[in-house]
Image 1: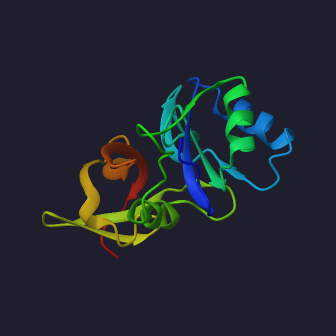
Image 2: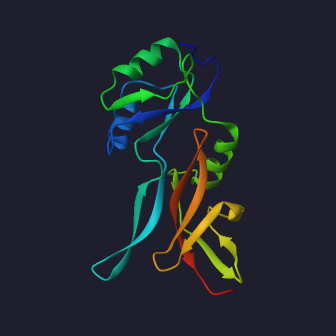
Length: 174
């Protein structure tokens, strides 16, 4: 197994709905040299006739880790309950691609790793984003569902295209 020699972003595949629990275990296990992130997104959901803002996982079942994965950390990770595997190819640990990181850094709030709600309006057939994390990413929006307050966005994650729903607020043109 080819291990990392410099700091990079890696991806852990974890048990479903255990992302936060695994993150807390890893932070307690003295992984001081690593940073762990469970990216989330805000969505508006209707319950009992009222709209509420809720947080959901951006990539369910995945935990991002930033650090240097040496042999000691690799085996500590393998022993951690809830972790299914560290994403690897045949002979090396996979890192998150720089292009994917750029988009993730734009989307994720620096404080709580949450993708907030973007404000946008439609003009003819084009979408104009006036505030929020989707600014500058108009080309990645596939579909807007104004009734649910969501946009389907195409993101590249671990060299795969994934469609994720992000929260939006649709307004009339200012």
